Image 1 (cartoon, helix red, strand yellow):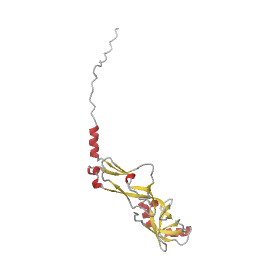
Image 2 (cartoon, rainbow, N blue to C red):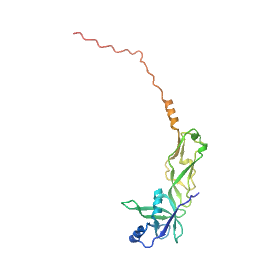
Image 3 (cartoon, rainbow, N blue to C red):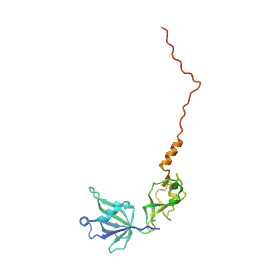
Image 4 (cartoon, rainbow, N blue to C red):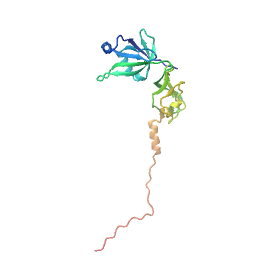
Length: 223
């Protein structure tokens, strides 16, 4: 099931070139362009504060957005490049690419863990250690999952959750395909680890060597 795609609001930028871009920045806007999808490139402006907030949230270049531009039909886009000021490291231009519903893209999808109440390992005091909070998948733009669900039901201390244990939407595959990578594991609590370590330690008994003669002192040589 596709998740909620965040909106990205923009306005059409009148005029092109460096002059129009500088004017946009003076007005608190970041100039950009939307291209691809079988349509002509569209110059746009995005409010600086909105773009900065999106960038600060992370994963901007791998997030699918619903671009809303006054006077234009909504279109799904993904950012392909963000130019930044070399001194201040602030955004100065953004490139967005249009996507069809059948387009294939790479996105990071969050993982949700369920079944904790039915997990023997957690009932025994085990600790859920999350290795990957998100998994990078190749997905179809029209069918992006909102999340991946990892079921902990029946898992004990020492067990792991791997990508093969998660049901992926049809037509979706992980970017890592050469191994069944770990999503999370259930580790023993620190107290249990200490007890097991103590039980595993055996005292080394002192041994006495029997039948070995003590070396005799060397005889003094006669003058």
